[in-house]
Length: 267
Length: 234
Image 1: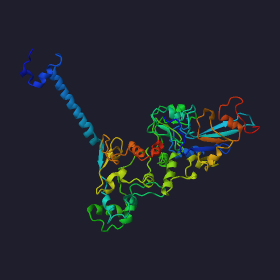
Image 2: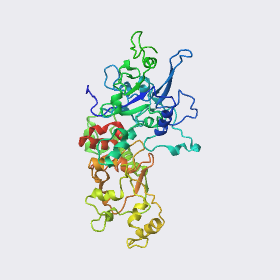
Image 3: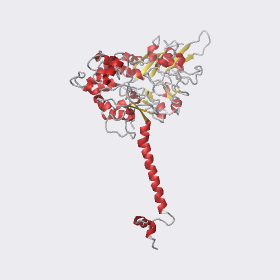
């Protein structure tokens, strides 16, 4: 077995600026529309509803007037490793059907619905709760005309399979097609961005190739304010967050007393 | 003890009798074996010949199309290579997506006159009258439609990979008569996807269009990175 798979080519990733995020939820809506995410008859049942990018609200827990809120948009982290030295994300190493794989050429973790057997091991293995199980067949209310908005670029899921954020992989394929039509082999930075990146009204999300020094994300992840969710699990997620607020950064992981390093004094 | 020959009738059976234990009735064993074998063969005939015949429904295309005439060097579409001729009708859009079977507008570009001399045969006349004159789309059956979970980029293979059309589509582009469309009654897919032989035996690259065939070509041509799941799945 090949031990050192490494990223031979690109490593697509995302940087979300939490100081800019207003928690409006446009990313969730754009994602659902882009990726044919089906709706439940009862969407208020959040244990069963499907959201590829989930918005979490966090609070510093203090009383007025010191109360602060922040929002965590959470897509699939597209981890590089399982955190215990294995060179597969934890969801990939538990998959019994080879339905999910890490592509070393793009860094994107794929999920093939027609191959998935629905054992939900990956859902249990994912530390970020980024995977969702289809308890029912896809439902798009016909009388509302929702099925007319389905994108032909993303196949709808069937009952009994896991689905998750794909970093809008079909947009990468579309960008490649455009490049090929113009006789280019490589795509530009702006040609491939995810639907949530495009939709964010405050441009809190930046998307690009983390390995490419010319891309903005490469620069952003070097910032001292950059961090990742549950970083000490060492799963090497490709979604980074930016926040200047220490209490936000502290909530992103389970720190032991004295372990957390403050960026600024106060707050 | 010598056994009466007239009872067994055949020398072969009597010689076999010396080796079988006395409690085994050789005659009934053989006849049972014969019926098992006959049943086995019958099952094979049903499974390999009758079932495939029932499995696929046959639907003729609404009208014949002569590919050979259209790529003919003298009267057909101009182009240096065969691929270029194919691409004249089966074109790429500006964004690099593949248009597939052309719409009637593409036919009208050349066959715009319903009274033109192109309508020599009865079928051509019918096409000009019923479709061109009324600008009505022909409801072609697509032989090569992949399942919904499959993504395929023609431009990546034709422009970038420099693959000829026949590698996957065989001599379809040179045919004078388009074949009857055969659809799998269970899956709804065209017979060209699984391949004409139910056993999956293939001799040419264009015999089947399954995942293994795509992967086989990727591996052979040194594009193993394109065997990653998300390259062909969506």
